[in-house]
Image (tube, rainbow, N blue to C red; front, side, top):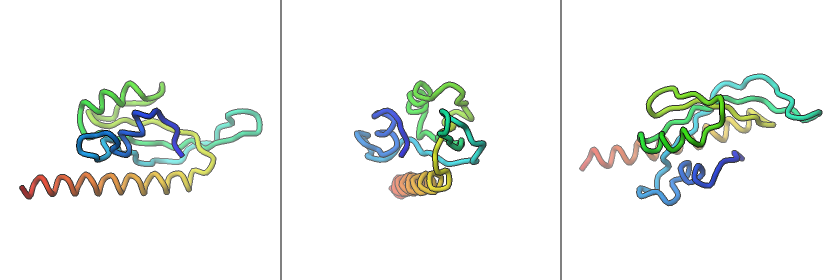
Length: 114
C-alpha cells in the first residue's frame, strides 16, 4: 500500500474526477539501496515516476511531493518511496500503471473516433 493524501489517491483512481479516469499514473523505477529507518527496521528505496494528464494536475501534484522529488518535464516528476518488499511493490505499481495507461489510451481512441 502506498501512503498518500486523500486527494492524491483520488488522482490515482479517478475518484471525483469529471472523466472518472485517473489523472496521475505511477511508474515504478529502479530499486535502490537499503535504508535503515530505525534500528532493526530496514526498507529498500524504490524510484517512482509520476505522469500527470495535464498541467493543472501537475501543479497540484508538485505541491504534494516530498522534498527531494524532481520535475522531469512539464507533466512528469520523479520521487522515491521506502518499502519492505520492493519486488511485490513494483509488480503492483506496474499493474496499476499499465491499467491507467490502457484507460488513457481507450479514452484517447474514443475521442479520436468522434
